[in-house]
Image (cartoon, rainbow, N blue to C red; front, side):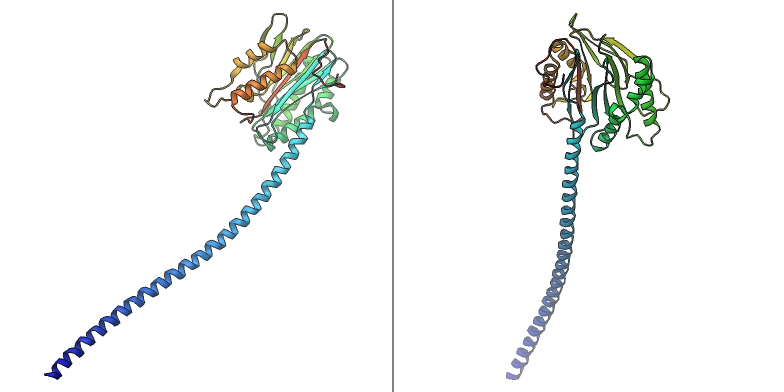
Length: 332
């Protein structure tokens, strides 16, 4: 009887030991799998750390490049500001402008300068897009038109017999140069003109640029001049017509880039031509400085910010015989 009990106890013990061994084997297998997963996670973590280190290096390199490009753009913006002319009074004419790049540098550019004792030249160009690429094209245009670089503006003035011929030939030659280039990054609009400072006669060509606005002091009215024309650089052998007007004492001529009329309010409404005309209508008899200040304030208020989505440029030429104290001394 005792032997039978012992045998049963031994069998139960063997059964418990077998169960324990199976459980231990299961736990060991689970532990091994957990260890494998942990090892894999560790390897993944090491890979992630390596990738993070690489990303940190890339970010550091990108930050360096960003700082370098920003520094270059600031330098370019400073250089571009230096070629934009200050307010001047030349004879009976006052010239004043504003330029607000959408980025550090602009694709808009304007200039005015004397070609002789009786002739004043002016232009405004708006290159496709904005930023550094557009700024490079605008600077090239500046070099080709500025008489200090002996460009086509000065050479045609010497070789042509009339202002109409001068402006049409200059614009046609400039268009030909850019139309022969490859790609489309060099397209631009332009208004280029000459003023006879003795008679007040103005003659200009319009190449796809918004029409200049003439303010007449005799009847206190404004009107647009020109009907468009083909933008520059699109097709060779394009001929451009000339538009003439006369600036009497107190009259002014306003040139602007499309960044003005295409400036949108926070609600998505464009500033538009009508508001621009009304502003000049209300301020046309004021000094060019006052006209620009009023327009600048209005466009900033309309935009809701002094940072614009497109380059904004305005140039005012005004004829009057009284000295404007707003013009800096020594620039008359």
